[in-house]
Structures are given as C-alpha cells and as structure tokens.
Image (cartoon, rainbow, N blue to C red; front, side, top):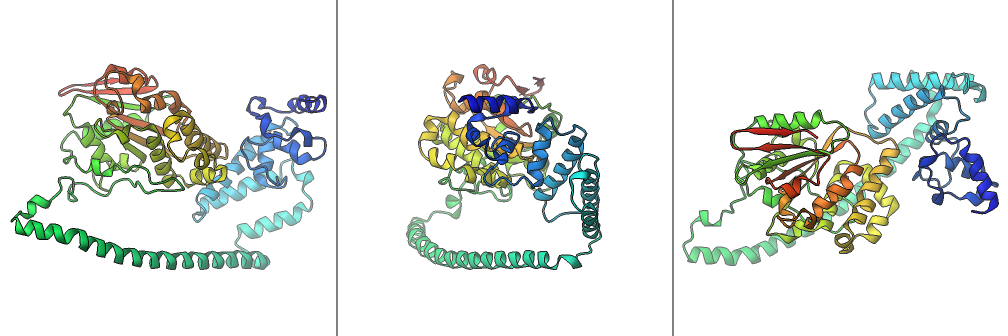
Length: 450
C-alpha cells in the first residue's frame, strides 16, 4: 500500500460498520481519488458484480446504506423490508399475489417518505402519482415500457421455438439411430435365448421393479460438467422397505427441529437392518407414501459401495452434489457460470486430487455468493448412504468423503442438512462432531443429540 491508498483506506474504515467483511484485494484502491463509484464498492457485498456499478440501483443503495455509518440507522429496517420484497419478486417472478403486492407498495411508500430520504427525491409528488398508478393497475401511461416488455418476450419466445425445433430434430435422428442399434444388439440375444429355451424370467433384471419404486430424485446433468456418476441403479436393487414407518416421522422431526449449528443426522444400524432400503425408498418415494415429505426436501444423494471404487472418489462425489443441487437451485449454476473458476480448474482428475479446494471453488464459494445476495429457502437435505463404505472400514482418516464432511460441511448454508447412514463403527462417527446420531438396534432405539 502506498501512502495515498493507506490514507484513503484509514478514512473509509472510519465509516464502515462491517470492516472485517472487506476483501481489499478485490478493490481498485488507486481509483478512489478519481471515481466515487470505486468508493461505493468498498461498502458493497464482496463478490457483487461491480462492473459498471449503478449508484441509482436499489440493490446497490440498500447495501451501501447498511454498511456506511453516514446513513441513519432508522433507514435499515425499511431497507431490509424492501430488500426482502425485492427477493420474493425475483425468486417467484410470475407469482405476485395481492398480499405480496400490498406489502411491496407499503414498503416502498414507507421508505420514500422517510425524513432522511424524501428531501433528496426530486419531484416526489410525480413519483407518488406513478406509484399510485402502478398499485391500482393504471398502466395507460406506460405504453412504451409495456411494448418493450412484450417485444422482449416475443423475441425470447422466438428463440425458444427455434431451440425446441432443433431439439426435436436431434431427438428424431437419435431415435432412429437408437432403434437401429437396439435391433442390431438385441436381435442376436433373442435368437440365442430362443435357441437355448431360456424362460422369460431369466431375462428379468432384479432391480427393474417399477411397481415397488417410483422415479427417483433426478440425477440430470446441469451445467458444463462432464457426466457425473449415476447411482440410481443401485437404489433400485433394494427390495421394498416394509414396516418401521415410524422411522420416517422420527427423522423428519429430527431434521425440522434441528438447530442451525447442527449440520445433520447420522443414522447407524447393524448390517441387515435396512438402512439402504430406507434410503432407496426415501429417494424414490411415491407421492402418497410415507417417505414423500423427506423426498421433497432432497436436493442431492450419494451411495457408497465398498466394491465400486468410483463411488469412493471424492471428485466424483463433489461433481454429483454440485450438479444435482444446481438442478434445484438455478441461482447456484448462474453464479458458477459467472465465475468460471470451477469449470476451468476442476473439470478433470484434479478435483479428485485437490478435493477440498474443489468443493470450495465449485460449491461452497458459489453458495456463499448467492447467500450474500439474499438467497434463502426452506430446509433441504443431502443423503449419503453407507458412508462407512466410502473408504477404509478401519480408519476414518482414509475416507476422503468423511474428511470433506468433517472439514467443509460446517461452511455450507444452514438450510442444507446432511443425512448419513452407516454401520456402528466408531472411527466413522467421531469425526462428525456437529451431527446428531440415531442408533437403531433390532429392538431398541438410542438417540444422541449433538
């Protein structure tokens, strides 16, 4: 730091209410004497897109008000109320019911009539008329704005129609190729089977029981990762989960009443209790089945198999979580596409080698970024089945996935909880110190609260 920048920094710190949250390396200190926009960046949420910062933007104003001591503290509750309304509208863009509409306009009017705001608004009377017209659906004076919105929507519709036609064309070609390949591959098998008098039962695969298990939580790829490992096939190998319906209520209640410092729940039981069948039923629960309430909370799942090494790879585990969570939280993918670091540095084998750095860049940092921008939601759930099979059964330090949870899961947002199943193995439970534990014996239940 040169003398000039040091002096500027010391002066700005006098007015900053949250100095520990400033990342100085991301700021252009040499521009402070030249441009007030760069001074405003000091008071913004770190990670906010500062390119062409618009000081007239509501989001920018509210952030500066909250962090700069020059603005009266009486403004902050009004600003927070307005920000909350803005987030509701942005996250549920096509659903603005009458109560929300009333709340939005009430918060706007409360803010603009505040004693420390209204003197700085030119033509506040015209602004109030404009707000009144919008609140009463009087849109005659906004013909140009409405035409612009309609034109934008029509252009977007045209682009979507073009994309849809391209997808249909590709699907048609893919279907023809698939049918041809299917015929080439299956016909010799059927010919062989008929010549060897095999019964139809012989050709039935044990996991294809559609009457027992519904379509599972999606493993669809979302983003620019190469295809992550798909594990649904292992879930469908389990038989139908019978009895013990009380277990769903117990786990649901444990998660819903969990305090914010508790990261999740470990479900322990001996071999043969039905832990994996429980996970399969929950992840693939039908709409009216007992586990459907838990299934609606799930945003990602993973299955560890001691005899399938790929399921133990930490990089594949991270890529699965990142891809699946992005399906349910599109804001996460938008953030990752904006930053690009994950795809540029961790889209290969390096994620397996530097798995703690990989989960930081690809998942934790983007989640923090969208949280700073006001994103929140109800409790969501990640399920990991048989975590004791993700590494050495005698040494927890040789289990990379447990190490990821132990060293990084406390950095996840509090609305994400983790449900883990495991055999009763002490080395695998001790590292998860921020988790409640339920131990299921044949005839007794032991609950250890964190």
